[in-house]
Image (cartoon, rainbow, N blue to C red):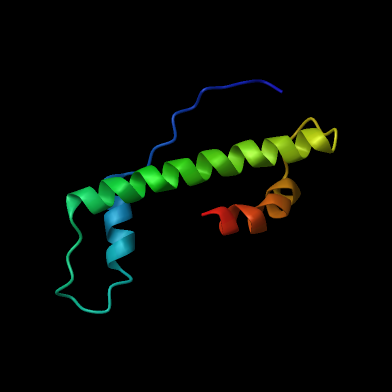
Length: 81
């Protein structure tokens, strides 16, 4: 498998709007630090999902990662986070 170092990034504004959409009261605010923390958490989550999916594919002697590999690692990934 080809190794590529791709920088995972999420826009802070998008993450902030997404989180704010789940607030029950309009008065609830989200600090910049909380947004940055959530962006970092999303980065770690996506990187870990990619690595685990790749390892699952390799354990099945596959050359390509498919959605089935991701689906197999997802329950344990969610428990770990």
